[in-house]
Image 1 (cartoon, rainbow, N blue to C red):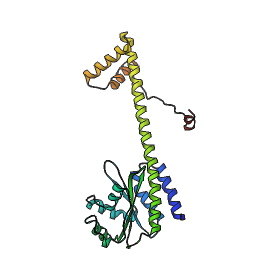
Image 2: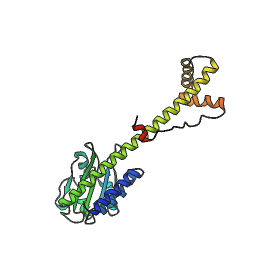
Image 3: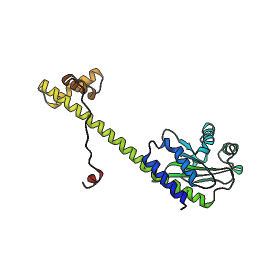
Image 4: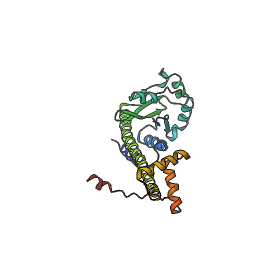
Length: 249
């Protein structure tokens, strides 16, 4: 592995694992990859998402990708690479006959060869790394191998980043659920004391009132607590054990 490739891998790791939203980092990813590979290649990165693909490009590829996103009919090498989870290579765009008007658009932007490498996790495509050159037959076996290594690295990093984002979302959902449950429990205690009834009976009262007023039981509980205490219940404080301590249990 060349020094440029190794340095680029390290920068990609830092960017994708410690940065913010991955989609907003695509242009930075493309710029890093452009510096990793030889011949001043233009680089595009497509991220597959349920709501639609998100595309970012290196500085040199920005105009190309903006134009392509405006004119594309969804038939292009990156889409095919994502659909098939297989690389797509166009040694000479002038001789290419696939994907309708795509070759003509590339030639109009000075692109004469293209190589697209999908990146995936557990066999499912997460996106594609597209390399563009102003010369035909640019993508040697070595460049294709470097593109494969880079795409594999990006796939691993994105999988880890997506897992972390999902875990964070689940944690927030759990926090919200626990906070709502605590508020309802406090309101039930107030109703039980006022009416001298069981917990089930108190909950029936809350549910009937929430249905009659068409509001959530949790929101009704907040109102009851505020009416008694003079203020809405504050946020719960959660104390999390360190990761090392959790692993021992």
